[in-house]
Length: 64
Image 1 (tube, rainbow, N blue to C red):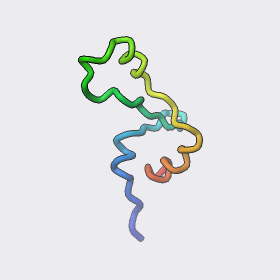
Image 2 (cartoon, rainbow, N blue to C red):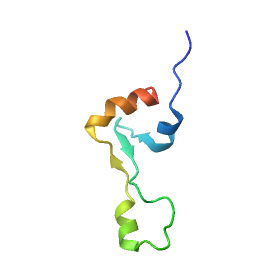
Image 3 (cartoon, one colour):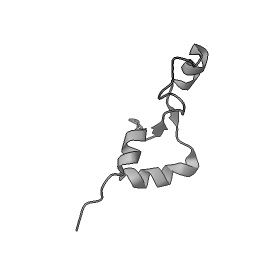
């Protein structure tokens, strides 16, 4: 029986905490950062938990 493969896009976007929660990064923090206000960039900094409605789908993509 073949092994289940991790979805490569999901692997790059989500991480699992020690307690098992799924975390995601906020949008708009990848490029064109020099013209965005520092206050805006600071607000986008922390990772946030994934919405409950998406958790089951992303867990399946990650093979958890």
